[in-house]
Picture (tube, rainbow, N blue to C red):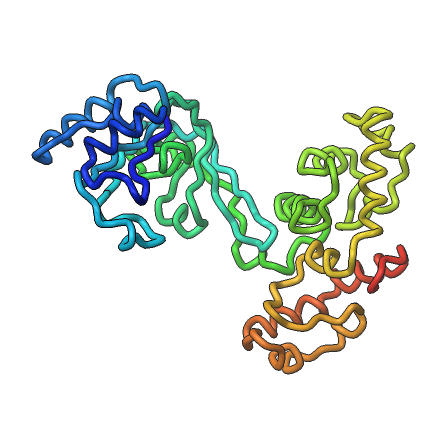
Length: 338
């Protein structure tokens, strides 16, 4: 549906505006607008439109005054003479089948519940995030528990609460928060699979090197074939080696090799972001790794917009042995700036 309510020089009264809009072809506004005099009427219409099929998706109703201020008083902000009244979020009960721990590029641990599939507002839900390791520990959710979930904004499943706990409290291999941080997991070890994979996904994304056709699925194939030990081993993979990896044919191997070759042409700044350089704000960055690596914490703090904490993070990044090894690998590959 397309709902148009006002135009600057239009009639002050809504009924006349709706009639003129209908004449201009904007019929939804007239067809789905109802005059009311009491909040009970608004509630009744909201309930009806929530329960009955509509020819478009909706997440609530809008209440508007019949008159509105003159156009010269309008501001670039939501009008005070209108208010949205959202539909209630749908909720369902689901049985937890497993608890997975996703570790992001920065080392943040996010527990994700694998659920016995349930339908929620015509959507099949199989996974829901707990949000944080601390929340999961507080709720102590185990396989067999039943949880209440709802849709936030009618799209994203959210965990509300634990409704019932199974008597058998399974022991789960839980990652220790102290072991994962922004400088952990630069290699494809068993304990680092999740964070290392997140580093690779970031590296090839538009936030990093923007490698065409390279995404998480690409890295999964290379990891499964044990072709990656560190973050840059893909740089030296030949087209012939790629063809021998399950999941790649001749054409896909050639395209992937071409994408990898493009990485060598990316500017120094893109490479810094791809490796995970902490945000530098408006700081002036030299075009030389060696120069940046020589900066002290105080040197970083002297830059505009960088405080003590961020300065320490930047210094730690350039001094970390794994990061220094990656810079040496890029130097050997003759990447600009290294």
